[in-house]
Length: 311
Ligand SMILES: Cc1cc2nc3c(=O)[nH]c(=O)nc-3n(C[C@H](O)[C@H](O)[C@H](O)COP(=O)(O)OP(=O)(O)OC[C@H]3O[C@@H](n4cnc5c(N)ncnc54)[C@H](O)[C@@H]3O)c2cc1C
Image (tube, rainbow, N blue to C red; front, side):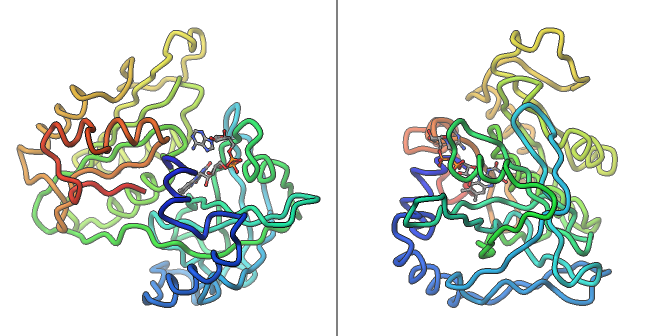
């Protein structure tokens, strides 16, 4: 999530609210040049249709808001078709939210990756971390049941290819960058025919920043041979007295040693998914540069750029 702004604005012009017109044009080309991906939810009979281009938007209604930790809310929206409709947002894909601050000329657009279970029809759920003075996240945190939100998208994520032979991949997240990583992991592990194993390394400031803890525990319980998670707490001392029962936690940052160890474990099997991607990353700008940049840790460890998927 890196760079939320620097990276996404450089590579995804449709996120720049100040250039909304060009955004729309770019988004039109982007979205019309690829096929629609259909949702696989079994219980729903139809898929919520985002407009075919990002020139057009839809509105969703908030049904529930839950404060999940000191700075993050889980916001649930209902789909207009109710319980027979699924969101159709593919795993690890994001939607664009939009609002126009009062007095502003241009809308603010930001991507968010849904975290609801794709088999659960009728809803779309976002996990939103609030940043100090954050334009979109502050607005999102002001939403309450009954509020409407304008959405566009989806912005495609990673198209996963299952493997019937054992393979290993390393997922790396920093802070709120966990959402696309969680979304993809959940989908991969759901397919029992897929033999891919996932090691997830997740860096947070402290235990209080951990979200989706129960969901990850459930994934571990369901697929102990295919999924492991290690939390890296960079500011562990600040958490004294706030223990939340997280096991497999290490102090410090996700560094070269941690990544080397994860990659080496993977090499016992076949490192890389069916498409050859070894590491999947989503995190803040500094972490992204340090780990996946031109002089980054992954390069030093011999992982080529094309073997890294950055969300
Ligand atoms: C593909 C994708 C998926 C995303 N999914 C989610 C999601 O599911 N949940 C979620 O909470 N966010 C997600 N984000 C981030 C989200 O899109 C916004 O960038 C974030 O909410 C901040 O926007 P803002 O308008 O509130 O802050 P801004 O007004 O844009 O920025 C306010 C201040 O916060 C700083 N800042 C903003 N974002 C970050 C960051 N990530 N790390 C460190 N500093 C930052 C800025 O530098 C600035 O100083 C995703 C981003 C991408 C690219």
